[in-house]
Length: 206
Image 1 (cartoon, rainbow, N blue to C red):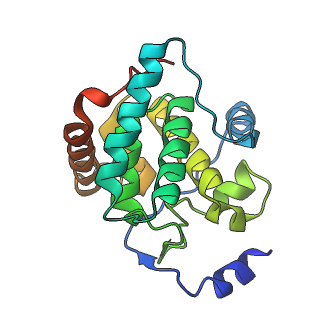
Image 2 (tube, one colour):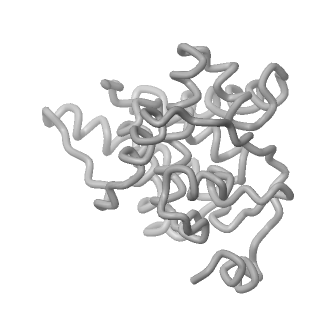
């Protein structure tokens, strides 16, 4: 399905207020690395080194699912989303609660949210990324795992670009680098998720 057709068929699309990532030149090595990072389409299957890690993950999943219930009422849909978000955030070396904060601020957990700038889906990914590092079809960004994969890879890229400065990386992700409103909102949402999930968190390893 072409992108224009996908948008016209998406009658339930809700306009998001998020900003927009700015298209910047990428070095060939960076483009290749990012392309490889989004290319694997395998389903998100968590693996663990110990039973303790698996139990911590299941506690995380249960706590996060409970908190997300008011935004996603259907249990299977909610769990599928959280499993994919956990997998994609950890795959990119990001804290799942940070990614939950980004999704909360960017799209309020709406799969078909579209911003006025054209950013798509849960993590409000700009269509130009599908051309730069994907298969060239921006309609694919409406797919849950693809959207989370792109969003996490892009945020990881910006975090590396900003030498680990989360404030600047979040600003760059939103197209508002140097301004506080967006990073402050995401970090506040992250704190809410951390407080809600608490001891259920699993350690993050890269």
